[in-house]
Length: 244
Image (cartoon, rainbow, N blue to C red):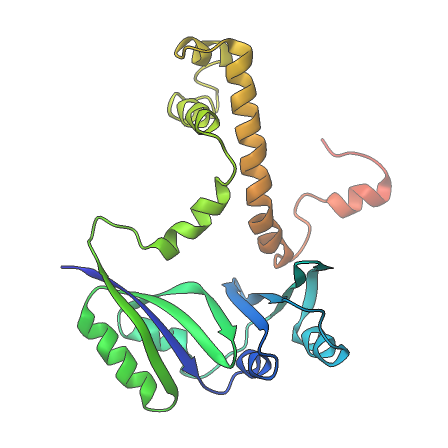
């Protein structure tokens, strides 16, 4: 049996799609996250005042910047509840929805993974019953392959790590360096390689720093939607002290 990765675009009543139709150079990427949604909005040119007002109504702005590369903003909003939403219908036909949903030039773009080509056909028939839809591609992939759309987050997490930094991180993980209690020391790890202890430690520390920096974007999106302050950071800051 093969897996299928299908790309399709849809038109139906949706405020994000309608904004992308009114502003053709705008691209909106939507990620469902817990009980809300995170939107990344980009444009090649500086947005008009009217567009800025529309973006402001979408939700809370988490990040905003404008430079020679264009305009970029990330917002968080309450997850709209649509009866018989597309994602619900994707899952009802035994398909897996792959985020983000992309809105561009009046179309919603979706990527889905199916375990049977017939599931894709039935999903398309279902969606065509009440909206405009186009199948852009359907690719058969073997069971041993992982769809590229599923690899994107991992690629981003390990972006900019060198081969030596990745090797040092993998060795430390496999040998129990990050276990509690720690199963091996930096010196013992270095002895298993052909590099000096100080060099190995430098590779490992740089790998850890880059990994956490890359993960920070996803961490901020996750914690931005979490309620409360579990570590008491705000209370400690107001008190001017530190917590043990």
